[in-house]
Length: 426
Picture: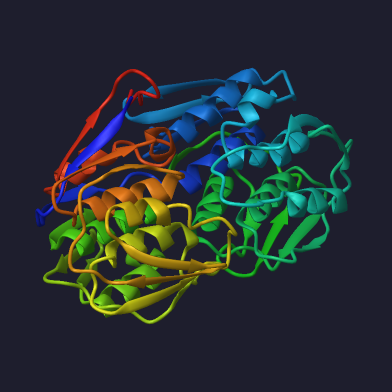
């Protein structure tokens, strides 16, 4: 079985280039369907979720291939509108294809998506918004059958600033007649990246980064070449790795403006963080300090994807830190595994209380979800002895090669693949 072996207790010193953003490239891949042309994506990361998206595109009749570090997607040959249950179960964000297929073809059939088990993540907001735009959606036995001879622009007010719903409606609105306004839209940087791609294809989209996104639909779109933004959660992972192990790391391409809530917490803990146009440098020495309560919230609040990472970094801090998870109901599944390593964590509902301890011990642990798996590697860097992290199929959904990048930063980390769940890097 595949695993990552981490020898703890070594201070970090090194540099790594931050990969393209997973949470940007997935909706952009769905949006390529609107172009009916070839789109070339630069900086596209090699991830399990990206491969799952490409399998969906190929199942719809599209072409996709890697060329000299870029991903070329040809959606002109698309001739199908149904996504199989097996492909939908590969990842939660597969629901993003609904708006694109419906906008282009007027019909779509797919099942409810899969992904990490982090608690209920309904797509009700996606479906409600599409219905307001004129879609007829029937749900039966977990299958969604959608039809819309013509989508119509309108005002859609989201009850929660859902990233997925905002992206789905932005994409669908590009093919609708008239103007669509998405009110209480998500403000994440990945929304702005999707807007940048759609504009590069000729769409008229504005407002991304604010709580109101406006799309003037009906414009003919075309192919383009576009560079994916750097992955802010990957950057947060390596910042927390440096905080956990100590030392100095340089993250090229990382943008602190996308990470201000995370860097603020790390500075409070005692890290020195400097940023410039080329990336971020982080220096950490000695034991960290506990920080004020960390409450996850929609952007620009503290990202739920970084909650486990910061928790792992603070396991050896002086004092007690309170975490409050406000996005997902089951996002403390990593706590039991961190406790195996000696972490002192108490959980009650949405609250987790971390009391710093002087020593962590290397252990055999298993990742339960994508970011929880990365958090285990972060904690292992500060543990005495060797840790063995299993369940890499979760980690591979969001990191090109986590062990490689940790080695570039000076860690003793190696991946062993038995063949099962082996990650293909090519």
